Length: 431
Image (cartoon, rainbow, N blue to C red):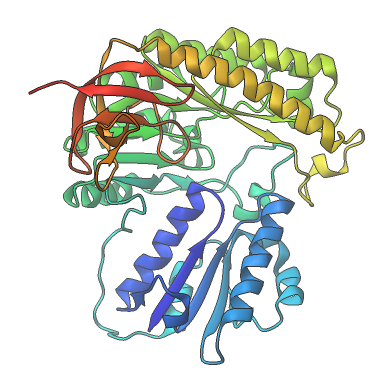
């Protein structure tokens, strides 16, 4: 059978879709990029916020309206865990609904084209054959008042390290150059089986197991959970990038208490471990503006926190109420216009800091992972390819523009000649 799979939401959902595909390929079913060629249409949904729920339902409706009578429509993933009845009401003709981790059940529903023939391989990268996600765990035990993930995914459960190492080795054999580690909370890895500082231990094992993967990148670290030992391992292991994604959500302690997030002191402690261990460390973080009750003073505290810490990459979200979370019931919901105004103020500051951070590396020599399929011509007539330095995670951070012609997936050594607010301008070093 042929299937068409569309994925909504975050990188963790992307990994779930990979696992769905792995199960389907093991049954010898074939993927297609054309919905009209598929026997089964699958939507892997997001239910993180109400806007994401609405988007998921719209995509389901669109596919339902376009499909012919011989095509089945499956709805899977996060939204089904919290709003299955809403899906059924919106699209009554959905054929099957599956939960967030029902990969084998989805494949079983297809039947098997070769019941005795299994392909025991990990999921293939979705990032153009250069980068791949490795999902350390699922679920979350954190009590954040704005987040529905614990309801959707349940308690945190780690994937066994031998399975993760096997998947990493498969990616290495496929020529992957960058492994991006994701989880709801990567720093909780191993806690469910009473392993202390489990992420540091795993990173050490992983680095040794796949030395041929030059870049291993850490995403979704939890403030206050970054230990000095974790920072030491990141500095000591040659293929662990000096890059950490650590969502902080706010800089005001009164706001953080309402969010049930770690204090700014805890955040600064984690930041200091990273900065002290790695003088070239890059930190990405995200903040929420317009959370219920956010005062102008609390917002100013956030701005001051950002100015003090000088994060290289900052993502900003305006608060969106999620049904079923404590924050959705809080008093003093912030006006949408004020949310938008505060968003713009944070982004303006973030852009200034990002430009300054990029300017600080002008004159340095960097390795650039090339992502372009082929070069294009700049306005000045030069051939240019596009890639990223270790400072930039795929799909969320900036780019590096390199003069010349280089193969996709190659690591090119170059000098940084110029800086834009989010991107770098580079010239290759002649070998």
